[in-house]
Length: 203
Image (spheres, rainbow, N blue to C red):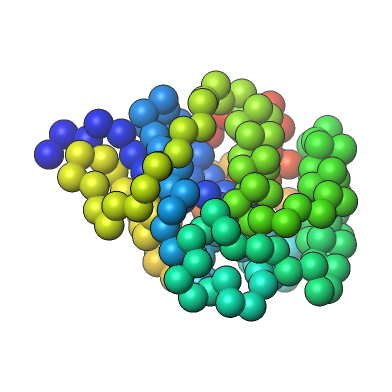
């Protein structure tokens, strides 16, 4: 089978592996827009490196979003101030990293805006992250749901919090690695805040 491209889900602050794969298949990738929202995936969560090890940030979604709702229609729940919690966590974990201040203003906006739909929020984040990584890519979307693709690499289930990643990642300096060692395949923010403009070289 010759793969002509790839299908990627839309994640919250996606992992290093996600951007590495996107970069490989660019410009021949599609972002999935019509799948049913799967629970406990990176679509609404991201892993960062805290002083205590991995910290998972989760965007709460409205009740009912978890049952057969197309991912583009899933609404964010603003019942509690998750944005303040996420922003304080990012600051607490990365304030002392080499490049946090360099990118701080661009990220801060996302923890003030009140976006209704998770898909729209993740889409805007992805566009910003591609710009910061200097990856020139046009985001194109699926126009209907297909259970499987015969000629495209499908990452919708393979990049998953519960599946160990086989992605061969090149190590880079991490702020708390003296405590817990190098942690691979965290959110791209870990790479950006630690490596800055060099981040693209690690993909």
